[in-house]
Image (cartoon, rainbow, N blue to C red; front, top):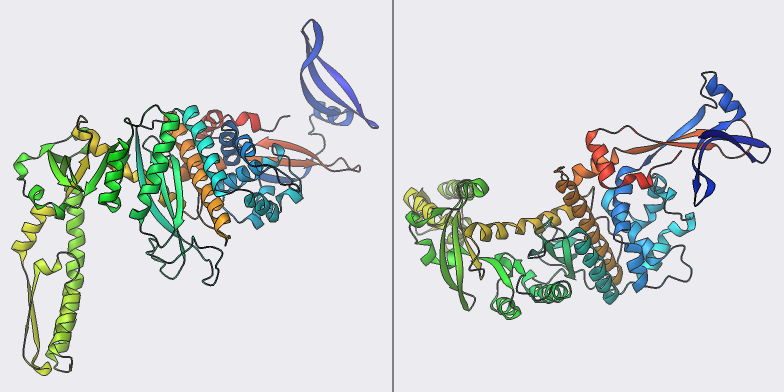
Length: 562
């Protein structure tokens, strides 16, 4: 039966509404609710609100608590601490620092120097008890210094293995892709050989690059293997290393590798890489450049059959074989009207640019004010016609023997364009050893390559789960930073997958925005005496989606209690 109990604290008595019950045969208080001092109770009974708050604070709660719930469930701190000992002067363990860095990277990426200020704006200090000195950016660096390449590989295996087991991820088919990220590391810095100038996929040829290869599951696009490499190396040269790591990890999780299917694009094709895939005894789904196999392009449209109208709309395909990369394997030749239309629009734009340049050159020659020899003018024409297919469609004629008499004319060969479109546009050649799979499954597997590409786009989002900012300039710290970014991506995609299984189909950004909307308001009360104000913590109102996410990620365990 409930009763009111007073508890003496110094010179003041505070009252609680308590409920008692017998536990193991002995009376025990099983619940209690704070009522306040005698003055506060009297004011409440009289219809007042007791001591009024003097100010309030707003803390981030929902997104921070949801990410921490994933990290806690995976026991990230414990798994890291099992591998790397705690720094002698650290305010927290290496696992704690890695978890904190991952948390920040998911919800609001900032530098380690800015971390302490950001941390103070969240509700997380309630359940992660750290003093101010422990959050100094130099303590993060001390922890990162203890993480070697072998340690990161061991930690990655342990964490992702637990993620796969706990979430029941399907590893039967995975996608492999590679990209690079621009950095702002000084050109004279010789402590970061992993950062090199190369072919920048962000078009920043003036910056040093670091490369990243990812293997992600088709089930949620969750990374399970990552590999960092110097940014000046072609992607195709890293395929072998990533495949070895993938096969080794797969063997640790699953008996045999025959059930594994790796999906990759034509950029990874080479005789050496494919020989390694064949030797590993795994399944593969790749692609081949259509222009390299004219015999397949000559297959008449009458042999194409609809694939699956529900899954692939107007897509049609031919199931055949092809000899490529030293072997003869199954080929699925597809035609997509959507791809065909997109390529046609792209060609229109390319032809328009070429015609504009030809018109400018024509006008210049017609004025007769050029002194360039014929070879130079022909080189200009060749440069204009260099983009793919342009020289097949635009026929150019240059007349005259002397610069003053040069005249230019051209025409568009519409018949050649129509033939090109009919023969090549909209077609892909898929290359696989999965001979028993239905055509629709081969196509679906190949299209899962977009999961890896989506992961890279997410890492290049400056707002959430972002590679930037990166304020590190040594190889070792760059590798730790990239590990943290990839792990943050895995956590974010695991959260998105969890929400999708509950019927909430949201992007990572939408999911985090909904969670961020669950805030914590802190009301600070001061009764006029000495000491710090008393804090009353409340969660903000939630909509239906937020209520579902609150329950889905178990945020009650981090919510403020009365």
